[in-house]
Length: 79
Length: 134
Image 1 (spheres, rainbow over the protein chains, first blue to last red):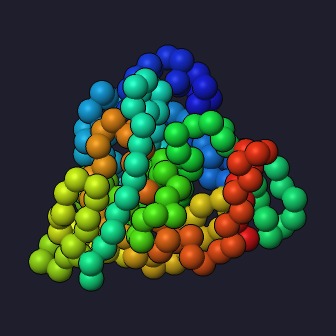
Image 2: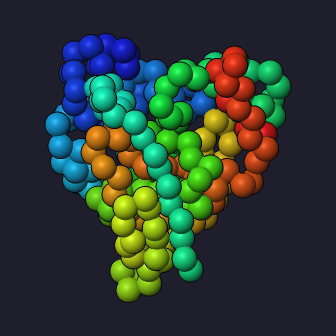
Image 3: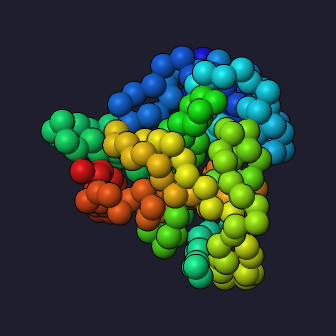
């Protein structure tokens, strides 16, 4: 499936998918959905169960961020 | 996607979006995960969440941490190294990475910070919505 098709079929879900085709910028073009969940952590736990040598992608099909949210990422590190 | 030269690949992005999400290849000894990371020049390190770092088999010592401060909290986060990170067509080996969860509402897996970006010349054209590194 194309990414646009996945976004349309599985709304507001975290997706784990096998990458079948990608472009030079590492953007997946065609994928095969392995699993989906509203819980991001469940997607990551599924990666741990994959056999070695996988090539997968994770992404959220909902709006980033949700309506009414702004973002401010700030990490200041004391070493 | 616009390719101007073999040394420069450019990505079109929405300049009105609240942040710039990038597809980033995280290569570990177990496999490759193409994660969605937010471009963040305000972050010293690449940031990945706990469960993803564990699933990828990234090695870290939970007793060796780095004190990190955000706008709201101060936490201790483990430091690890990602065998290879590829973004915008460019790869770096042994990239320092902090392990820390971002809120689920962010919609991204983590942050692409300076531990990767400082290896390149970063070009961001907000008027045209084009991003590239060389």
